[in-house]
Image (cartoon, rainbow over all chains, first blue to last red; front, side, top):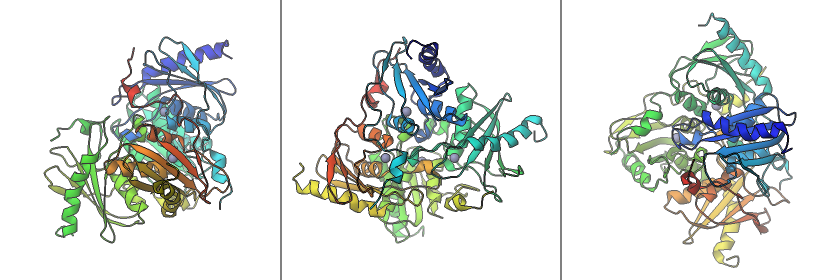
Length: 137
Length: 137
Length: 137
Length: 137
Ligand SMILES: [Zn+2]
Ligand SMILES: [Zn+2]
Ligand SMILES: [Zn+2]
Ligand SMILES: [Zn+2]
């Protein structure tokens, strides 16, 4: 996977998507690229709002765009910010959003395009679609 | 405007976008099409989550997609649901999201493609970007 | 109503609630007080998060607190910010949240405790609980 | 801690809070109790909305209530649902909301009041307040 042309594009495009970020409130740009099961790539940036609670993250943006085009299975997702020297995982809401659609490799990408595969479960003991249907008292 | 080819596409495509809705929780499909200032059209559907609070509406989906492609001014937005006989305006969060990017005509479209222009302010006396910068005590 | 002791408390307490705001990101404090049908008052402030999209408004905070204590009908809600000279209505998400629980008078309150009754529908042609059950095609 | 009277109350009250849940859309009741650093307890339930994306979880509800009363440090949080036989951790948004205020023990509680301490990091490699200030390129 990591040697494929598609993977290299994913790593590069997540930072390119960042350039479209609309983040006048946080001034914190984020970009994301997601690869669907069939090899199509979708990208997203963060889009904020004066009503802070409506802020949309880059990761959910990219996933939502893919779903809107009919994709619901993902191979890999790459996320880039302007943070110089640290790898950080996605926010809680984005992890939850990813979990909805099953397993997916996650890559954190620095501005210099070095990357790290996220080495944990996204949401250990997480709540997902099946739990809404679990047997209740 | 309403006689243009672009406008007719907008009315039609909002209902077509609805077919991609991921709404296993509400079973309430919504589709949206937005026309940017330069005449480009973007579409969106609702995308839900087992964590209900992460549900994304069709309207914000379409706007976010447009912003992600570099557009921040909108001419018109059309919204369609499966409700047979009523015209309904967008939810509060979507109105707020629209207001962020300025004025925009809104059309509510029935499944039979009859439509009505939204006859009110989206958010009367609404809170927007400029208010965050208003003089404080 | 506006001459009652309860109403005066509502106007005063919305600004007092503002002092507890946790808003390190926006530095925009908001306070709210809500009066339930039976005359109980609940207050709320905004509570933000490094993940901007999780920001909670003062209005929803106060309403949620009341619901958590078993109240679902509201007489009046008062909202105060630090903006010196303008009356502004609530954000779109808070309007939608209010609409869920039916009609309610809304008062916008300046820091000097002068106030204005919100003179519009909160969400003209708004989407509410009944619409999820409307007849579909 | 787990032998204290306060802890026993926490375990019990999270399920009692569930009874106030307003969840006509999911029919999935959740209750939460949180213990602040100074030993005060706050409770919360989930409060949903016809606009699904505005749904508020029990965990955030309880935390927000505590913050609104001036508390920003938490010892422990207990969460209960009606699921009969499984321990599940909180949703992603609630994990993120907790992380904002630092470390806190989390307990998952079954309807029969048996409980389990959450054995993982809430958000491994998570994004928090300090990251917004990290050195950028
Ligand atoms: Zn995120
Ligand atoms: Zn909406
Ligand atoms: Zn609000
Ligand atoms: Zn939650």
